[in-house]
Amino acid sequence: MADDKIRVLVAKPGLDGHDRGAKVVARALRDAGMEVIYTGIRQTPDMIAEAALQEDVDVIGLSILSGAHMELFPRIIEALRTREIAPDEVLLFAGGIIPDADIQPLKDLGFQAIFGPGTSTQDIIKFVRDWAATRPVRAT
Amino acid sequence: MPTVEDLVERLFAGNRRALSRLLTLIENDTPEGRRALKQIYPRSGAAHTVGLTGSAGAGKSTLSGALARELRRRDRTLGIVAIDPTSPFSQGALLGDRIRMQDLTSDPSVFLRSMATRGNLGGLAPSTSGVVTALDAFGMDVVLVETVGAGQDEVEVAAMADTTVVVLTPGAGDDVQAMKAGIMEIADILVVNKSDLPNADLFYRQMSAIYESYSAARNGWQTPILKTSGAEQEGIEALVDALDQHRAHIESTQQREAHRIEQARHQVLALARQRLIDQLVADHTTDGRLDEIVARVARREMDPHSGADELIA
Ligand code: B12
Ligand SMILES: Nc1nc2c(ncn2[C@@H]2O[C@H](COP(=O)(O)OP(=O)(O)OP(=O)(O)O)[C@@H](O)[C@H]2O)c(=O)[nH]1
Ligand SMILES: [Mg+2]
Image (cartoon, rainbow over the protein chains, first blue to last red):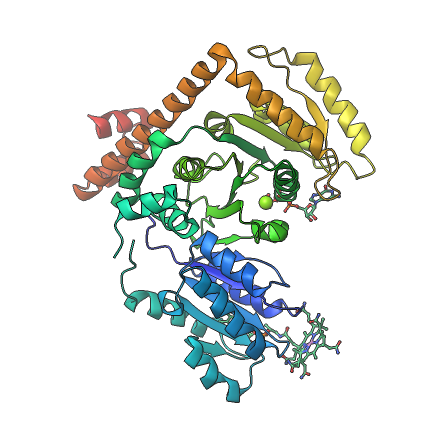
């Protein structure tokens, strides 16, 4: 059975219409054999956290190019916590236009990686697979 | 670490995270998932299960969203299971049905779960019925199942759902498709969707004419043909009324019993079939007999029927 299927949520928070990167990443992960839920653009932190809960995903990937990440990402983490989803239970990562100076603060929040423009999708796939291979067994 | 029993208890207490975790265990057909189903199944059966089927792009997800909004207006709680195909090449899937139902995400009385077919034919995923059971036992008034738009062989959903809605669209070759695939026979409600399109009325009249000419009432139920536009939220009240009428019909006297027995028979046989074939393949992959027989059939030394006989023997 496919009980090792990796389920991924790819979401675009805020009023950011740049969706090419999110779609590229979603398709690449699908082609790598994962089940990818794409929610579309203009998602509020609550919508993203609620979709993560309903879909019981292993991975949450946020794509943002608007510059609003330092405002939105902490609210997403908060919305996840309200739903009993701790950041370390899932792989939480992001991509888009994110200045270097913001990377460490985001990692401190629970983001495991940030991928900027020009990242090869192979690197993203490898990152997810490596994480899946070493993650602790999930509590039922 | 919570046990399955804890999760089941929290499910019955209305905890959505527990429901979600259980759906995963059931979908993956793990031993825990089976144990959970054993406990959940006796407390299911109250929900009205509705299957929504039709060719790819017929507007099923948009219509599900519209239906959900109307059901919520009538204060019903609901679970939605949206199924999309697994790629046969990568075994991955892009599940995009949520895009059409974004506004429902923040409604605490709605729970939407996307599923990939994981190699199953017939429009459903292998464990769809288990997932529906859990949403039903969670207490949802209605559970909507959107099948993949394969356009054929969707009888599986009809065997599982209380009410099957077949969605057709004008100008998509759906008239011929519907005739061919025997999809009309499974429809409890036939919907001509995208009624906002210019050629919709003509298509609706054609379908009505075709359908009336050969459909007799089945078990005292005359399948209605309705016009809807999911995008414009039109005709949706009439559709929900029809769902309620069909539900009332199958709830009537002996109908319900007969319907439930058919559903149960289908599920037991489908699972038994799957297990037998899995067992057969596993056994004869290990001992090499499957490959050996296949090779002989390929070389025309043996016909496929004899091959199957030998495999089972
Ligand atoms: C194409 C583009 C547009 C298109 C978008 C089309 C679309 N549907 O996507 C259009 C013309 C519509 C547009 C509009 C605007 N844009 Co513009 N746009 C770009 C541009 C040139 C390229 C973006 C792109 O598509 N790249 C290709 C994709 C594949 O790359 P990517 O998104 O970076 O994704 C990769 C990685 O970042 C990563 N990744 C991305 N997401 C994720 C998610 C996960 C989970 C992971 C793991 C990885 C990952 O992996 C991907 C593959 O390598 C960028 C400049 C740039 N060089 O990035 C500006 C840019 C993003 N735009 C910008 C701006 C300001 C705008 C506008 C506000 C302009 C205006 N004043 O009108 C509008 C806003 C539109 C809106 N509603 O949001 C600014 C943003 C500035 C900022 N953040 O500080 C940029 C950076 C240009 C600039 N230098 O000023 N834009
Ligand atoms: N004109 C019109 N277009 C619609 C309507 N409903 C959906 N569409 C469009 O039809 C396309 C498919 O809609 P979906 O709701 O995703 O259809 P679906 O049947 O769920 O598609 P799959 O799940 O991919 O099989 C989209 O481009 C919609 O915008 C409608 O009522 N009228
Ligand atoms: Mg759909």
